[in-house]
Length: 194
Image (cartoon, rainbow, N blue to C red; front, top):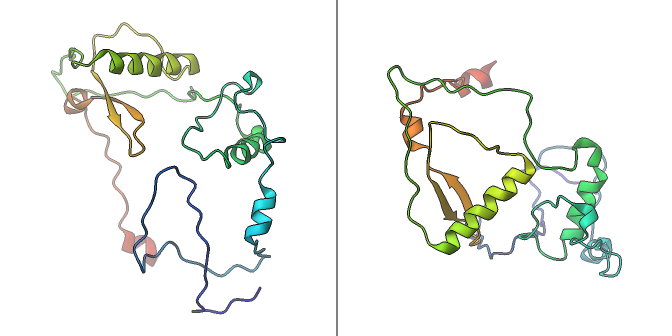
């Protein structure tokens, strides 16, 4: 397929999310640049043939696949493809979500700062259950660990655009007492001129 500069191209865009999106007329979705390799165009029929049939699709509830990658917001038809992609590149990751302990982070406090211990925000029993489930999941994945700290910040559940809860810790009091690390970005015109 040969393409010349300033040639109009029609590209089919697939939205894999579960919420509807509205694209205004004339919206720029991306830019193309020259590529000298092979480009393969695929038709709708060919794309559909790549989707595994329900009989051959892996069972996402199979306990052998534990721990699962969070796929509840991925459409049913694309989940097997996503999981097979992760399986194909399993050598690049351990297969387990969690933390990397290659480095330690230090938080430098402003002189004279004292620890802040805030009470939890008021919440209903359903919210408490959701928070407990999130904390238990993070403990299981070893993303967090129990501690006996003199610092304490409250937890809030913020709704995501899809309606699911986002676990958020209110670190505003800690941030006020923290010496900020400054990593100034270089000037863009200097980067472009060099």
